[in-house]
Image (cartoon, one colour):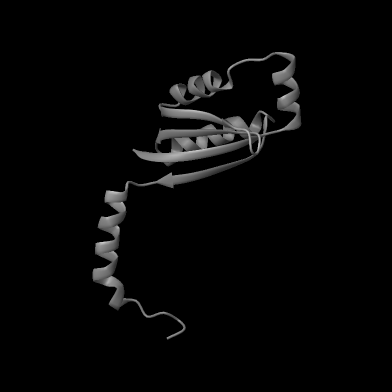
Length: 109
């Protein structure tokens, strides 16, 4: 399973609904993620850009399902998903890439 950082920007209509009936939107997100088999690590609200920011673990297919469900709701104007790896995994990738870099011929060389 991979780790994902998901940022989803709320629409003005979603904010209207939150003001009319305040709820913890993190709980709603957790319920959706759980139903899809995703593991929730953290959920935050970004005051900088009006987004819910989630750190979740799962598969690309599960993330895609969550994106389709939430975007179809009309509550979000955009969703950005970043797959994350540990610094240990990044170091392994660096070593493996370094060992193979000579095999690549760049178009500008």
